[in-house]
Image 1: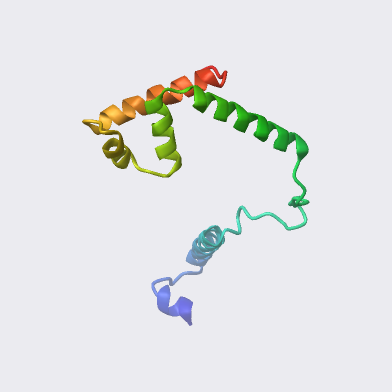
Image 2: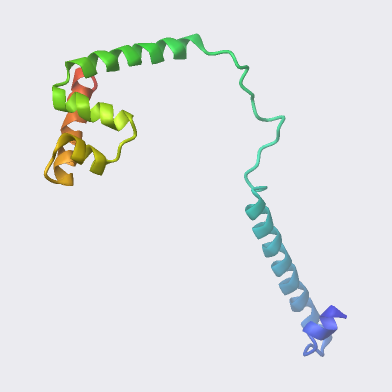
Length: 129
């Protein structure tokens, strides 16, 4: 009944095969879109995913602690403005708030300070650019 209403202009039997393939193509495209929208295309089986055991990896913990110590030591070696800039950034302050707090004339000045301070911090931590 739907085919008769929707494709009433088809009169010959030779036109049915191409019409059937066209309908099949539409249905396949609709199915792909639906599975992509639902996230079923890239979903993984629960059996295939390795779950964390909850225990912290000691090597990662040591590496993280070492990096934190290097960062703290490097921040201590920064000059006053850079140290204050990093402190404000760690408090989630925006660049405009930092500009006001540090008394900079323009926002670009704060961007320049930030870039230079990050470069200096990278050098102090022993990292290369």
